[in-house]
Image (cartoon, rainbow, N blue to C red; front, top):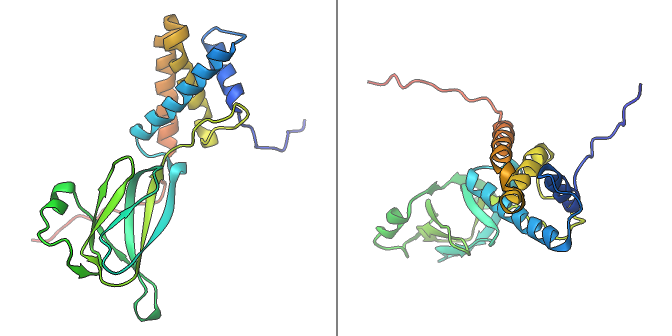
Length: 221
């Protein structure tokens, strides 16, 4: 027996919607139902942003900061900043130096926010246009290098595929089925929600960093 030799299976948005409606016991959708399902799909993506890390949405980004700068605006599709360093070009050598994240109240209580030195702390303001505030303000040119969580891209055209890792396709389908059932098949909502939560938990457990970690006890007196 032969195998296909391919590992490219994916679902276009219209196929995804069709599968979700079939799970709700509905075949032959009309134009409004397609529009309604696509809206539900976009809401589902936003829910995933609230549920925690989705590794395929984590990416590295940089921002050049100049002397005197203590505030920058990030891309509007930034959900959060996970970690960051300051890249120092002094003496012709690029050196990445850890910068610590602080809370809003900690930043607020800094007396003189215009003090200039190499930035050592940053506060992330998670508004519609996310901002980062540095302390101290930059005393020369640096590069802010950070890992961010970006928003999952909107569904868009029905011929698109989703901006989702292949491992989450079963979860995406069951989640959309659950959302659609709230409007078109309430008698199936309970069962579909259970399936969705099980699929999401299974995918989330796999969507994690598998690097080894060593814990050393503190034996200091």
